[in-house]
Length: 278
Image (tube, rainbow, N blue to C red; front, top):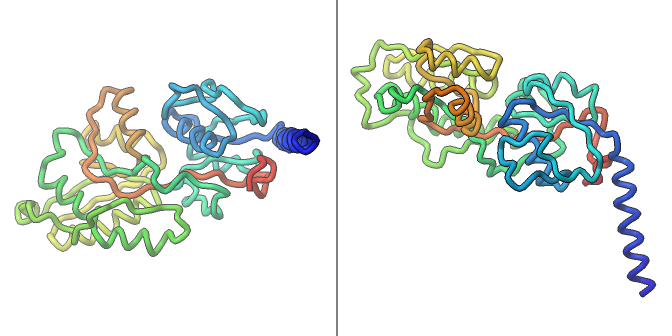
């Protein structure tokens, strides 16, 4: 009995110490619908918080049901989370923004089987065109798969293409596309670098890929919706689904390319000790 009591007391003491360490800890998270939910799900997966059962991928801090470590959250625009790391203890950051900020490896990542696959999208009316098929084949090429394997050995970006192409689609009439230009909007690394690979592939068929780089999570969709560009490549599927639902747009996916596992990055805290994690 004494041993059992000692074990219980030790467990209580450990939990109390963890709570004391974490009390006052601030974590910066994205403030947009899908990325905030994604960040909170990452923290829940590590046992740091519990969300309401029906919270889902659009969860917000209001959906936190249990916060045993009394964590505090600073909600900021996704692209700005790297910029506030010096003022918070940790930050949950999208892979593309972490790459752009040249951050060191995250303290922990989402599971590599994350459903948040980054996709190439077009207006629904264009999804079955030869232009869309040619673009999809180029971004799902073996060259692109090799690029991810060689460039992101730390796992910060992972190709999700299961059956890579040689860069081309046998059903496409490439002769009819000769001399044409495909306009596409994207964000930076790795999206723009992937598109540079696709640009070279399409050039072999005398097709020009005109790449416009933007730095936000709205413009690429408004450009596709307005017809200013044919396609975009910048966001994951849940984000696109939510954007369509919120805006009444019909922007659809023609190719899933890669996943950038969201990670918890060091701010004032250099490791996970303050959270009671190893």
